[in-house]
Length: 495
Length: 93
Image (cartoon, rainbow over all chains, first blue to last red; front, side, top):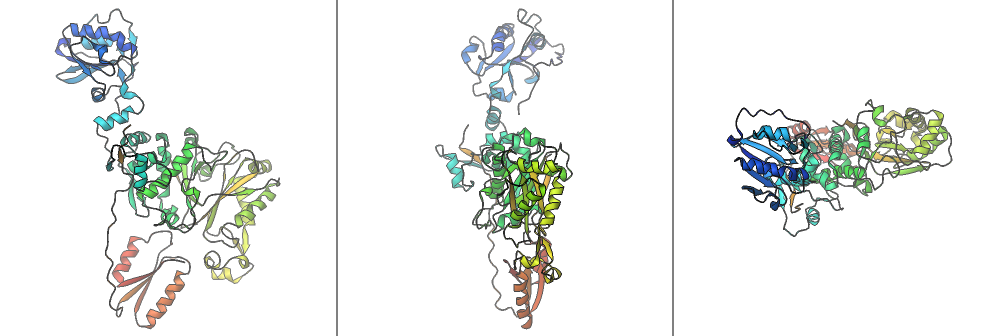
């Protein structure tokens, strides 16, 4: 990136007792800058004193008519090379190397650099400069690609000049079916501005191919998914969480089930990047929710090689496999957030990845007591996959505002609700289905007693979160396969 | 912004083409591994194979990974390779 120099800080200037004539000067200006216009007579005076002056103009060359050595820098090559972020900038070269520079107009600085005591005597003491064209939106990355060394390691794919890059991404199999943003080097560089981590850093091995995934590859896919650079800390942490062995991403991908990684964000970063935790929380319309969730899916597809019909053997799939990402609603302090319940500080920002198929709603407009509402929940939760299915099933229950108010009014914590549901979700052995989902996960002792009660989530996890809109007595179940030791929720703090 | 040069979003790996091993002309005298990936009822299938193979005088060794959602650890794969001439894997439910 450009070297930054504070415009209002006066650097200590030591001219070393050398006379100005011993030096050469480089100045960078643009016509569209009042401070440059103010400084032009001064630059003429420097030249008139016999100093060698190389004058670079970023926009209109006629602005510098009459100078001996005017350089057209509309391509900004010199401005990039000198690291100009403000015009006018005056640079002093000694033996061809920069030893001093002045940014904007500050008379005492210019006088000191040039050694000309009365320079700009009639001008104001100080005028800040204007932004260099090198700092226009998108320009730093563009110039770095054009003139610098980006350090990016990925293969460059050159398209025919008139080829449609969006179509080119489709043709190469990089898309989930929706258009992607073409991952140009400029866009990827801008995406990498969102993290301090090195593009070369490997963050894990992505199944099914167990291919190494670098920060750079995540950034490329984040561009394609539509992320903004400030999403990168969340994106990187989501990918890392999904690659933890406990999450079992290979299983989530390869299963015939519809499940997919769900990304939940807790903590201040969710608000900072504008994530949705309220109305339509699992739906469309929020860029951060959509793009972060989509990036994880594209990383699995493009880096890991996980594609439907190949290793992805899902019978139905789910719209959630495009993207399923949201923030937990933490606005009401009466329930602690999921992350806080795990022991994270409320000030910590975390990403939780858990498996989910999509959502199914529990609608109960009638219940006014926590006990009644829990009975409604229990009926719906028991039906996940099959009323007699107790092995390898798990769920998150998202409670929206009006249902939460029932529990708040009764002083019930999340833990109390969970305890109540655990009590209600016990199923007698005789009602369990045989085979994979029922009896085969039980011990011989359990099978022997038809009256024995088995928890619905016998080896699966069950968690309660807050999310959703404020109007309507709804909650939502996010069901999934998996359980402890196979496919589990994983939470990581964003660093 | 010039859009005609794109960065490759893939891992830039190429699939290694590994030729299939030739089937042994006979399993006589071979040590046969039965690998259970821990999917439901895979053990029933492998138990039956075990019975049949053992009854025919073959040497059978049994292996099982912890859970079907996770890949077999390298150590387990190396163990099977070093102890068996061929391995039969029970894949699905």
